[in-house]
Image 1: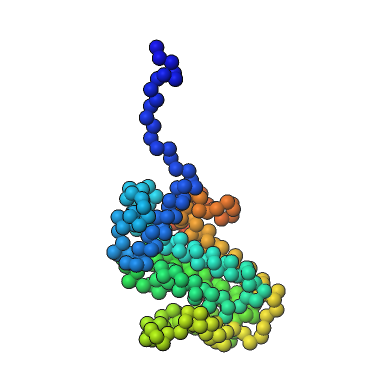
Image 2: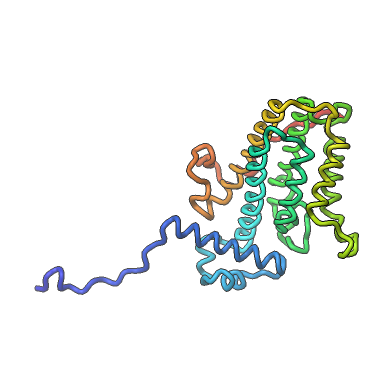
Length: 283
């Protein structure tokens, strides 16, 4: 009888990827999807295209995402997460001088640098294509939560004396949206050689917000810092929700902080839908 060492070894399948390598592979696939969707749009981008761009087999993509739609939603969510976390860092680093007229120009530049997030804001079907009708991007979605979220933030900023007290919250919302969205859509109206640089547009947007919306009375640094940190805490709820969504496809993306991890009793889509609604005040 042959000894144990002399017995032929059984063929073994490929060892499963570590969580770090699996996450890195998923991120590489998402990076490839971003490049192709920005180039061709959602409707013309196929799983085969993404697999070639990422250097993986088509079946590998389906090990992470069940459908093309699931993959694209992860692309959107990760792009949004990048913008939101950059806003958080900006808030903390400029807390002593926080104001609306400096925050929104920074956000404006971030949106310009992330075409898919900009398309989400503008409901741009040339990039989003059929995905623009996805349930997550409709009225009961995280996008709608952003509108409801802005109402509560404006109310807080007005109560603290940063924004004009003579305007209702709804008027503040409309004026802020008109200024921000106006600058987001202006470029196509001008010949290319007459368009202002993005940085100049951001600076002018900030000045328009300051003159139109902010209280003429300057706030002390301590109050500005308190408002910046309060806004950061509100934004953190979106970070938690988006990370919860991505966690089902990219395990480990939620990081090591327990407060950032999703409630295991809720599915990720339920976390997105369960962000608190803020009641609207009378006009």
